[in-house]
Image (cartoon, rainbow, N blue to C red; front, side, top):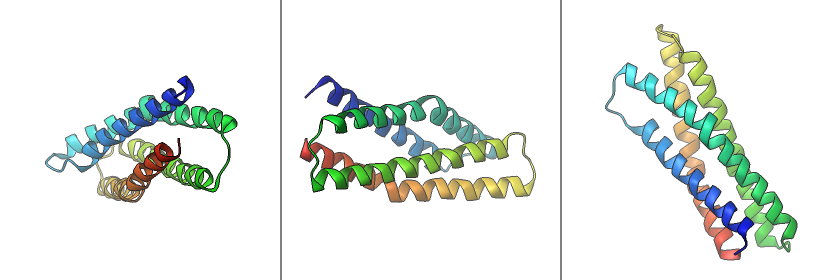
Length: 144
């Protein structure tokens, strides 16, 4: 395996670990309103400073690997599915940022209701696209 391929797989593995931590943050249910705000703040910071750079690393290393690859139908399916997963994650990052900005200093019912809606959206995206991401990783591993 080339150094570039190792960097790509390592970036994907780290990204998967970050997502696992975020799933814990989003699904840990025994907490107060202050803990909910802290979890939203942590998720925001993780997305901004860890996850976004890892997504960029996955995209760059993947694009560089594609430049060296021989295209096949299986590779095209993997790339298309990977782009869908990355796009879904980008939407999730946008929701996390919206939630963080809406929650800063918020105490009224509307802000808290919006928080709950955005949290459900984040969880729904994860529920749909995390299994797809695992399948993409397995497919990539199978065709390498």
